Length: 96
Image 1 (cartoon, rainbow, N blue to C red):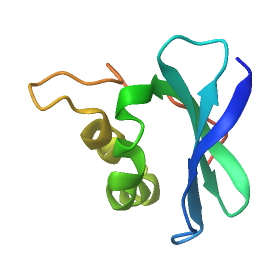
Image 2: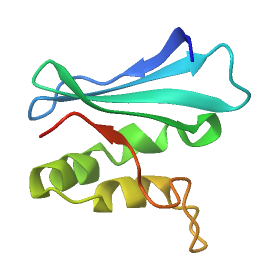
Image 3: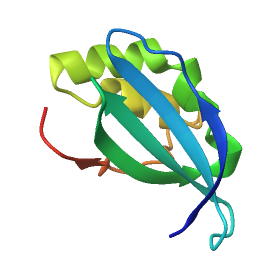
Image 4: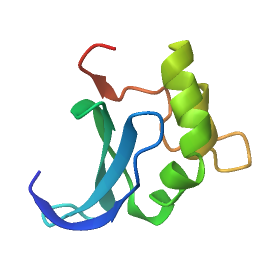
């Protein structure tokens, strides 16, 4: 997938930065990158209509990364009805 324009980039928080990119060759997905201390640690496609849930739950996600679990991602991906945009979280991870 080709990254097109950047949708957002958060300010650093405890060494974490979140970025989302429009994907020119996708129908409805965005690419989300989670960076820690200058290195991308997770990269995954996420429904574009929910992409703002990532920075909205940045604190939950950061705490999950520090705790080495996926609860923050599960919160960000929740549809509020028991479903989740992630299904079972499979964000690529390059070590922690």
